[in-house]
Length: 252
Image (tube, rainbow, N blue to C red):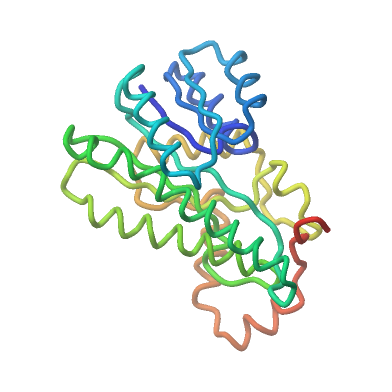
């Protein structure tokens, strides 16, 4: 098995790298922090290629994809996991730039990760493209406009890709984590229902990818919450969530 993974240096990405290494996969790991990638590579005990670059840089992502394919072969699974999370209040000019960064990394990062592999996978007639989204994409939450918008876009982009690739042998899987124990969530200053250890999350994520499910919300309890949120009338949603806890803004 060959797996190419973005956002691999920490959190869910690191845990996914360890999970697939435990299954004997050869790995292509892409992230911005070269030192983290080097340390991770040395600890895995499988064939690993590392690519320290930014998922917003399409040329760099394409070069990484070509190098990995030349060295290890065309991946069986590509997981677009790179993402960032900050609170945003767009009346603050600095948050406008933060909003742009979140959208670029969380949305265009998936586009850039999928792009180099779609045609080769289509030609081969097999492969799985995985986009890591979030239950935050089901509704817009106060103080998290950028994050909610980016994850909503990620869900819909993956859905469109799934339809475009139907019948080609290439599967598109959307994973929507709830609250997972990672450095990203440890900054959240509010209750996080059904908080799941990251090791348990990646095992369930791996099962969903193996089965080729179109969309998986993990943990399953958050799937019920997400569905309820989508049907909740706006008046009730507004009354309940307008005073909800907010993500910390960048630098605050």
